Length: 407
Ligand SMILES: NC(=O)c1ccc[n+]([C@@H]2O[C@H](COP(=O)([O-])OP(=O)(O)OC[C@H]3O[C@@H](n4cnc5c(N)ncnc54)[C@H](O)[C@@H]3O)[C@@H](O)[C@H]2O)c1
Image (cartoon, protein in one colour):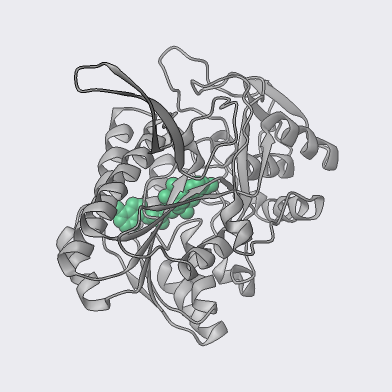
């Protein structure tokens, strides 16, 4: 199949593009390199030394003989360029990773709030409008987040996107009819940041275009990714994936493993009672391939799949890492506005039914990530580790009391 990977230079997009190419698909990456520019803005580079897209793609060709195209289009700003690209390449599948994805970055200041809304909502809407304009019948696979459901305790098993409800029927004049009306609605959203809000807005755009234009769309409600490399990125050092460890982009488990590797106390926000959904990076690339192999038929509602393999409480993860390494942990003020403690129980039946065999947390895999972090520890800037983006004014920054000066 001909596949466009939007955001294919990023943490998820790069290993997904390589995996799809390895499976024999004809892959093109579209990426405006905004994530690399944000690295420069924050002064926090990937811990791993990632090569330029051109070097990465040349290395892939050298190692495997397979070619991947690269288009530096900004899909949020350059609508005409996107239309021309779709008309030229006529993909069978578009995998859409191309959004600003850090909740803390999206809450930094009005500049980043506005950028995240402008970029993410326009990127998604431009793809949808361009599919309709060009008449390209591609299956759109979008990366959403489990965060659209909110991070409170639901008191129930969170379904895959839709909730069946019964409501009391009423006449037009408001008189109860005594009937119970069945309805299926999008699971009520409860975004915890501007970033999560953009994924909520994406969901509504998808619902409209699936209904109005019969577009075929799969929305993957993904958990937090952990791990760094996949079978393909390990083939050559020049294919190495990015590893974010800073307070804005570092995802919690990878950040803890990096902190353990450099002897920095694990910074647990609040009580660490937050329960989150996780998925290993190798399962993420498998899920993308499975979603591509199982598209919805045209005219159906958006196919929503929860892409997670396990849930964990943050302080339990920190404790586990302290047990297998000699790391210390420290509770620091939580920069986010969220429940101090929550339970999370979510369905992930679709991918399991499609044959996904989950790679769950194991000491071996944790050690592998810590080892990667240790190898590149001299590239770390420890001052970038504390979370400095605050959800409201007058909060305390989550820095630990004692930190080593260098890695
Ligand atoms: N990393 C996670 O743990 C995680 C968890 C859940 C969901 N997701 C979702 O998966 C997707 C990818 O996440 P990631 O971790 O790879 O993020 P990332 O920032 O590493 O990658 C996103 C890529 O998209 C590109 N991009 C952004 N805006 C663009 C635009 N307007 N035009 C072209 N390219 C653009 C960036 O340059 C970057 O390379 C995101 O949509 C994110 O919301 C990620």
